[in-house]
Structures are given as structure tokens and as C-alpha cells.
Amino acid sequence: MIAIKGEADAVKAGEWTLDDNPLHHAPHTAQSAIEGEWAHSYSRERAVYPVRSLIRNKYWPPVRRIDNAFGDRNLVCACPPPEAFAD
Image (cartoon, rainbow, N blue to C red; front, top):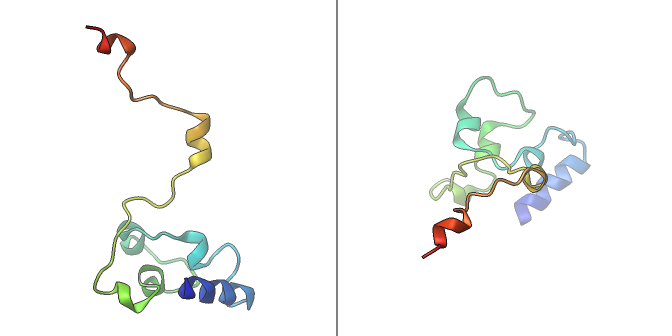
């Protein structure tokens, strides 16, 4: 939480823009950290390891962000049909 507050303060101070900062683009997956040219105003290291304690115990999220609003509007039911439960 302290690191997040520090990043928010850096945005407030103008070090990073509102649209291009580690908070706006978090979480960073392994794929997003290694692919192509890095086009952000902050370093890859800052994106991947916002705090030093993560260097040894990094959890890599499998996806960036989930669009919950899209999922709510486009519900796909993966449940079996009611007939599957008939005796």
C-alpha cells in the first residue's frame, strides 16, 4: 500500500501522466513485460517489481485486467442444460 501511495503521489507531482503510469497499466503480466519495445514512461523493472520484496517471490498474473462490465453485458453460461440433471 505504501508503494501504491508513492506511485499515486508521483502521478500527482507530474512525474508520470494520468494515462501512462504503473497504476494505470497494472497488473503487468510476464508477456507484457517481455514483448516488443517498451513504450511507457516508467521502466520495465518498475512495472514488474514495484517493491523490492517481489524480486524473490513474484506472482505473475495470467491476464492483465478483466472487463467485468463487458462480461456482465455478454453473459455466457457454461452450465450444463437442466436436462443433464434429469434422472
